[in-house]
Amino acid sequence: MAMPGTLDSANLNGGQKLAVKYFTVALALFGAQIVFGLLAGIQYLKPDFLYGVLDFSVNRMVHINALVVWLLFGFIGSSYWLLEDEAGIPVVGLRLGNLVFWVFTLAVAVVVVVYLLVQIGPGDHSTLWLINEGREYIEAPRWADIGIVACVLAFFFNVAATFAKGRYTGIGGVLVLDLIALFGIYLAGMFYTPNISVDQYWWWWVIHLWVEATWEVLVGCLMAYGLMKTLGVRRKIVETWLYIEVALMFGSGILGLGHHYFWIGTPEYWFTIGGFFSALEPIPLVAMVVHSVFDSGTHNMKNNNHPALAWIIAHAFGNFFGAGVWGFMHTLPQINLYTHGTQWSASHGHFAFFGAYATLVIAFFYLALQKWRGNVWMSGGLAGAWRWKWALGLLNLGMVGMVMAMLVAGYEQSQIERAIEGSSWVGYFVAQAHPWFVQGMWWRQVFGWMFAAGFVLLVWDLLTLGRSERRPAQVHAEPGVR
Ligand code: HEM
Ligand code: HEM
Ligand SMILES: [Fe+2]
Image (cartoon, rainbow, N blue to C red; front, side):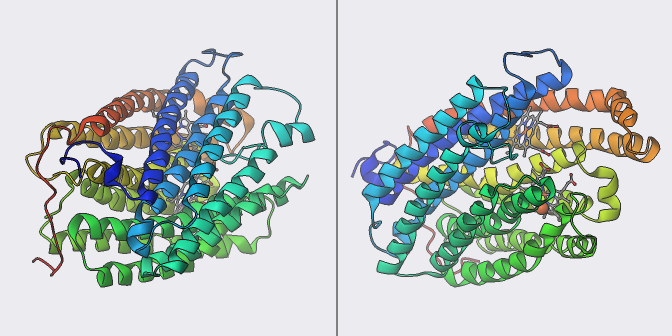
């Protein structure tokens, strides 16, 4: 084995070699997401900027599709990362897994290039098949949809077959069942109907049931594994928490779907169902915070990977505040009447996606880096530790700043456009010209640059951290260090 500190793929098992490929593409797409976000943000301030060259509609689309895809790559990578460790045997069908990685990556690249080359055109069937399906967040054209389904089926086979042949841990069992739901739901977003209410009805099955049910369960599995690896928490403890979280998550998240059925033409009973169940959704997120803070506390925060644990804690709080608190704020129909579709939603959307998902995938980047460098020391006194700390600070502060700026703009829109002007067309423009809105958009941009600076540091850190370190990682075997 190579010296600790040297990046060597011999340090990784088969699944992990594949995982770091997924992580690399995820990081690149994360970068692209930020670039397109910044461009879209500038267009809010200067509407003429790049008009006709790179329209806002396209920037925004690439921004949020890149987000979804990099997180999916991060999740697939993380699943491969823990697979051999959990199942106790080499990945079944690894060659297929590798092939699928390249096909998937190539397909994503082609889809993005087509988005950029064909920015406007008729919305007919050929567009749907070849260019853009027109469904926010999952705009990939039909051919790519089918390809995605094939790729994830192969991935699912790898995971399920490996656990079936090796051993099923609690984490493994939850993961496999969750992946069936996660990818099964994607099919609902491919269902074409000319009726916009029906279309939205099904589309939300993907969007809401992903982020508020199946993705949450998936990050629950990842957090459980991450806590075992960094802190040395006993399996029994993390798996018990996992079962509780999963039960609560599905108990509230499935019918919580109704909070998107308030204004799209669905029957009125959704007000009650959606309002009630979605209001319960923060509860599992509280459980996740308690879980991670409790585990860290009982181990006196002693852990063998400082950056990874820091990002896991950022995840616990980001998930709770971004999804739980920010979601709860506008989830009752009486409030949503005023806030629906304002910057309030964008504030929550940024906070939740970053807090719940980006953070945990970044934690896995650091877990991977540690092992890739031969289980190198990543605890106190690490050379160049300022970089990961500054990246953590700038990314989180940049995000919270953007979120607050959008929240102020959203408050102003709810008040002026909705409450005072009665949701009129004129009200929409009056609200957008108001200084609070305009300034909110400027501050979003300022904090966006801060976020981007944090990203640059993160990449730099991932390329260098632990390089000059020769100490092997600290071992924190359980017996519940207190
Ligand atoms: C990690 C989990 C979550 C993520 C990633 C997330 C993300 C988002 C995003 C991106 C939107 C905007 C959708 C659009 O384009 O129209 C949205 C809308 C919404 N979210 Fe969440 N969310 C999460 C959890 C929650 C939770 C737990 C609640 C409630 C307790 C919630 C309540 C809402 C509501 C009410 C809307 C509709 C806003 C509107 O009417 O414009 N979300 N969410
Ligand atoms: C450099 C930083 C960023 C900037 C300047 C930025 C800017 C923007 C802009 C201008 C939009 C369109 C909003 C609208 O249509 O009103 C948007 C949408 C969105 N962005 Fe970002 N973004 C950034 C980073 C991020 C990050 C890191 C995430 C998540 C991890 C994210 C998630 C989203 C989501 C979910 C939406 C759709 C929100 C909705 O429909 O309500 N963005 N972003
Ligand atoms: Fe939702």
